[in-house]
Length: 366
Image (cartoon, rainbow, N blue to C red; front, side, top):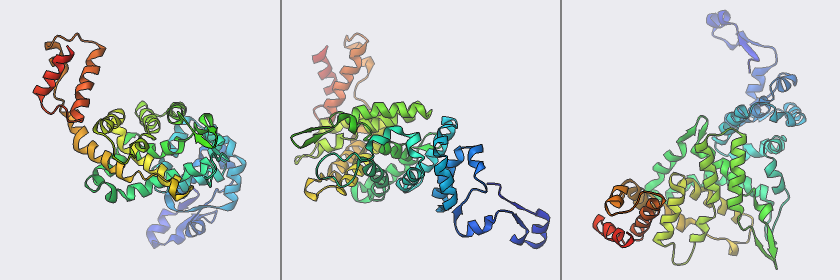
């Protein structure tokens, strides 16, 4: 940055790049598509440049020059010195780009990932089970990468809702944090609690509760990076429920109640949860025998269809309201939500289809 200048008078006269003042052979580096520090000390002056080099390489499709990469590795521990907000902004601009898995692996090869995410270190070399071919960190990177493949394949999963989902993923949660970047962040963190919850009973490997515990850990990380409450809530909920889709892969398919509860628990974050679950499944499939793979494509399509075809309409136009409860003699309080939720769940199951039926049901509860 600022390594070259332009002699404006000469440029206006000649229009030639010969008027570029280039003391460090920057034009040559541009031609070779290289990111290069003019001197190592600039990395000490502002350590956020360690991460910015990755962002420039990722966004431009350049490589980091070998000498510069070596200097970054020497100074990787300095990456925690800049304010969390500055690191966050660089990181999420990287996560907004396609193939973020490659950019995260570049960060890791430069030694920048571990200081920023010490919670990922226990995943390195952690290979639970007898059939997995890679450690959990490698699986994590692949999950991030498969976000792109799932988005690319939406037309084959839920053709009616492709554009709606893609627009949803571009929606900003805060500056530099579109939903797709928060989704990739959730993918990066989705298995951080596996080492804490690992059990192996007679060869049966389990990670009971890793989703819920991981969501809590992810919230702490979000706060460390000074992310907004909306982003924190989105990341945590997507991780907390990322295993829910796998529970719907039964031969008979998910029930209406199961579909409703899934959508109710995630609300606006439902698309990201489904994409993470499918990306997770695809990454897992690459590291296990085919016969052990659980196909989540069909239930994913069913959830999307229910979410856009039924759930959002039900949420927007409830059959009854709190005023109806008051008129029927219910006392305002916590039970209001429980009763209204019971009506919605029966509506989702098809047991209640009209306002009159909803009011009759309420009378049985009053």
